Amino acid sequence: MSIFKSVLRLAGATAFAAAIFAGASGVVAQEFDCSGLTGASVVHFQGPYTQQLAMGAQAAVEECGGDYRSAGPAAFDTAAEVAAFQDMVLAGADAIVVVAFPSDFWIRPIDEAVNSGVVVSTFDVESPASLASLHTAPKQKDQGTMMADVIADALGDGAAGTIVTGICLPGLALIEARVTGFNQRISERLPQVEVLGAFDVKFDQTQNFSAWRSVYDANQGALAYVGFCENDLPSLVRLKESTGGEFQIASIGINPDGLDGIERGVALAAVGQKPFMQGYVAMRAMLENIASGENMPRGWIDVGPELVTSANVDAITAREETVSDGYEDTRAFYNSDIEAIFADLPGSVQSYSDLLAQ
Image 1: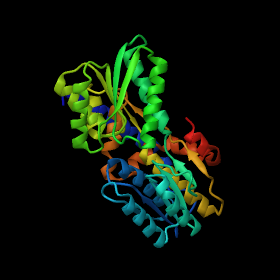
Image 2 (image 1 turned 180 degrees about the vertical axis):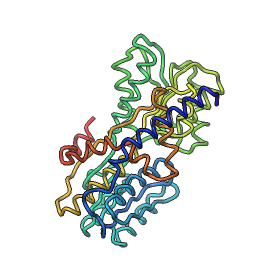
Image 3 (image 1 turned 90 degrees about the vertical axis):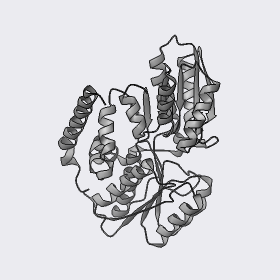
Image 4 (image 1 turned 45 degrees about the horizontal axis):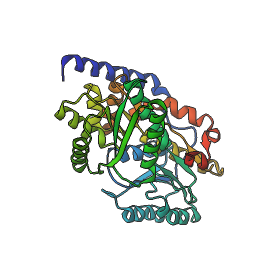
């Protein structure tokens, strides 16, 4: 890294630290007491993204004095995730937030838990046909729309040519919704641009790069290459640097290598899903309502997507680098967003039909 880049990184980190310090007085124990309650999170695999989902839930539980537990398989394994969820129910968890992937498969486990007295919400992947109370996440289609806007801004209104897209899990509704949002917005803003794909670029990081290389070889000369999963941007950074191409690259999902690519000017942007916020908002909402004895609202809380570009990558990178030290700095970073939601929690809840509407 150049001295200039190092200075920029330091400046970004210093500004981030100053923001944390300035907002630290707001990051205190919640006014309600949840001691004696147990909150748990269950994720569908272990990775940087799901770590932050769980960290958000942990922060909410510990702020009000409750007991926190977490579980989830090392890799995608729905049966293992369901087993971990059911273990949490049997162990006496009062509130559980879970990644309901795939949605239909989770209807029965969630309904059984709710009927036994457990409050259940979902994050990342919703299960609206179940008895889950809340879903906390950005709308998938909105993430694709945001990505399309940043690409369109970079290419300019008169752009003509092709954009090549890749999808890590073809057929998965939530990822397909991102593709839909992207395609619709590009057609609106860049009528002379044709979107090719989305081609199957695999989920595994090693397979992902190989797949992107094959897609590139078959579709050279595009204006941009865009992915819809967190492993895509690191692969696209490697691809662009190895080919010396002048095209734009971007993806949905925040990844350290992808952030580095944005910082070095190789990548244009990434769209994040605020996983910490997803976990925090769901868990705090459940515990507040349990502690107060009120009925849980049912619906969707939009925590919004997060755009990362050269303008804010240093602050975002600084935030991400604190994750290994615990949740306190990330909690402080999102404090204003959290305060806005809980200033009027009922008003922050939208219907599931709003979430699912195309």
